[in-house]
Length: 336
Image 1 (tube, rainbow, N blue to C red):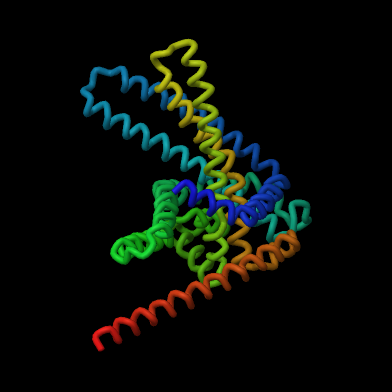
Image 2 (image 1 turned 180 degrees about the vertical axis):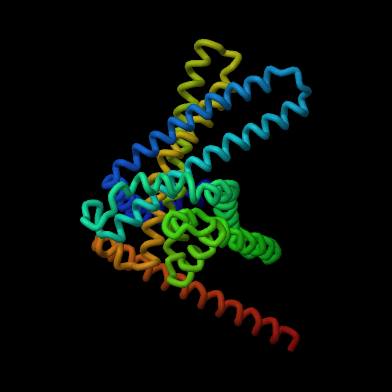
């Protein structure tokens, strides 16, 4: 599995790096959004401090093991949900800013509205906050499940029974993706729709324009996820080494907690780049000329890759159809 994922990433790495470079270029022109991300990281640190006191109280309490376990589960859910809500709030803020920049032709354009960042921030924490909280419950889990099933599907081979079961799961997850996906936050930032409505519209937009082929080929999410995991591992390792020197009996607890906190904090920084990536795809699907006006070279590279991916999909579809017809013909001639 690891070898397969490595080969998959290597083949897709050039296009992934192209998209990430464009996203970083966009974020670099909007340095004020990084200050917003730092502010949300500070809020998350404060919440983690409060959460740590609560978790320590549960561990030290005299409640039975069963009750203590359930309380820790509830606390863990609250930690992850809070982290997801803060990340997706930053997502909506950055998406709104990126969309404004692309529509108006640049950060320095005279048509850019004044105080756009504060307006995006106020919109995210008031009007759109309910949709953000609702979507944060589902998007991360469904994205992970879809990625795992896709990897399993490509490894099955000719086992028809297992392939049928995995195809059923894949189509089920694809249906869920129509209603729970990260691109919904761009639609929320731009049009103010509900989360489910935004997710469905974004996915239908991708499928109707063929941009879904680029989205499926892009591995920027996996690259950013590996960066988040690496940040958590570095934090957990450094904390574990310090704890080993000072308090050897608490290495696992402190190291794992520090790793979790590091992942959440690095994820808050990474979501700025991920938001720029999703906004670029939505804008390219809505009106490719927005991308052309912002960066003509990047637009031509994306258009060329889209053409290649659509050709690849059509050739794959023809191969599957030809193989299916050959199998049917073989089964019909066998009794004779």
